[in-house]
Image (cartoon, rainbow, N blue to C red; front, side):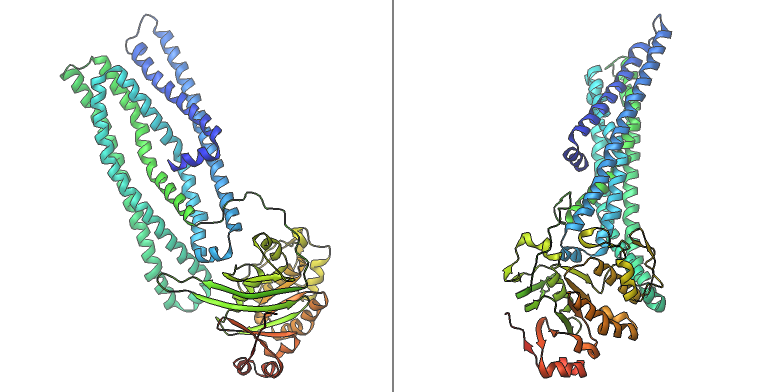
Length: 560
């Protein structure tokens, strides 16, 4: 099984120890049956001693079987813990492009449902391991007792397994379809949470989401989980009936056909009855084990970055005076048969300490340029150069350490971090809270914000606070001022940005605030995936009327 192979790969010694304990438990179980056959069915002249020995054997069996199950549970849940840690670490190491293609709902389904299914499988794994090993050992004992009766029993069990396997195949099919329906349900949940305001305002949209999307996906989930449970129940009932039927068959062959004595037939019946509970438990554990296999396949299908267990010691951010994009192209892949589209080629030269404004219509490529510049996206063509030297694969982690950012889809963390991930400078948060006009409202202690539930404009100010505490060279702000009130917007452009420039920061601000274009050292524009710079008369007109001026002629940026 895939789970056992993974366990062996991760903890070979521990798994071997657990299997030895399980094998010892099985031997004691078979020994208990043999003791009943040899000492208790035909009681000799010392029945008290036999009963005392039988009690000691049961106590030893309880101890060893419990130890085997406890050890396997501990091993399994430790494996799940490591799997969860490794999955999160791989997510942290995976490129943004891959995560965006996967989508949040699919990632959440893997972090929750897939890990949960694997955990449940390990709860049932001891039953499967014990049942399989016990069955093999018991059949070997039965073969030693009577080869003819064993052959009949084996053929009967073979028929039982063949029919049961057909049911298990149906269970496996429905569990795979169930996992696909679960992905769609998580997508619906995400739409419900992210779109809660729109759904509250538009009840018709809420009704259609509920009736046409969520209900269909929930119905598909119900259908497949019901079918999986039905086929699993049929397999369990079939196994139960066939096990009982094998007892009648054994007595008929032993007594009616004279293949064996009554004592041998009784031992066969006792052994089969002893196997009945483990075999039924094994069949009952199959759905969870099949679900775990599907979950492992789903985790592999994510195609995340290979596991690097430790965070490498961060390389220091490189010293620089000039950052250059030369012929950089980024390609968005298409969906299905549709072709993708390109952004670029982009040529841009940024000198240290410059204040740049970037304008452009929706979908023009502004955010893509920001992600390329910060190293979040890797170009498919072209080069990014620092002081004339092109970046290679080993340079990307250090290069990203040049940047702090507040993107439009930012997440506000509560932890306040200073340079290189250390604690924020004493008094630094309070100084920036004063500058951001939040000192009267925001409280922090122990290196954390005590609350993050503020308006969107205030949350953006706090995101800027976190970015400034990192003390990185380049700050990228994506529509940062869009959610600010007019007074603070003016303060941002007229006071805060000049302060950042005085601190030596290089700032790229994506903006549509044409009233403040005069604050920028340079005014850039994205249009249809191409980058141009507005200069001279075009820039003057842009400051007066951005919508009209941006559509006019512009000078393409030179690579040098």
